[in-house]
Length: 248
Image (tube, rainbow, N blue to C red; front, side):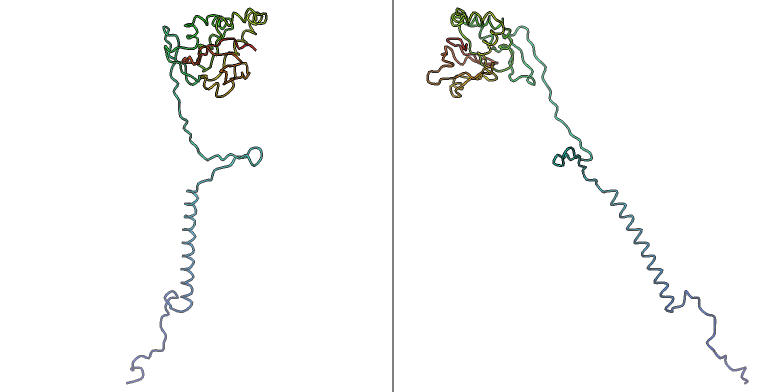
């Protein structure tokens, strides 16, 4: 056998493997770098989507409106819906055959029931108070005694008014419409129905002229005038019959 017939000798040569299949350090480094870059891109994309989602659900805080100095501030929410309670005002009930009517409670302090007596009605039932009723009509104050607002009326008797009109001062007052109105308003107390017990407990009475009339709880008098009839209550007020006028 010749040298040419012997088994082939391997010299370590052959087709070289592609770089991407080689397991050398360079290949490992390149592969790691590519994987790291891909991971960074994934993290950035995920974080950006999360931020947009948080921004979409963010709630804008209430805004503050400042007027004048900084101590006067009003906080205004972005959207406020206020529902105010509605009130239904009952219709006015008028009975032509009755002496009084039901008054709208939204504009009055007292509700007078249909058929309930007013202080004016009480005056009509007492013959000894006919003169003060006439004077109230002259002064156009009779509607007050028919009205819904609470009050207290101190009514002088016919005899007391006759004695007052017999004087020069009294005659001048009664004949003058303006002075007559003031004279009668001094016998009206607003805006309450005052019992005599309340009057004597408080020690004074504020009348419609703005004056405070003095009360003596020992002698049971108002401005030195005694009571003939007390605490006659009506739907809109209280009537007291006096022995004399409350003229100043």
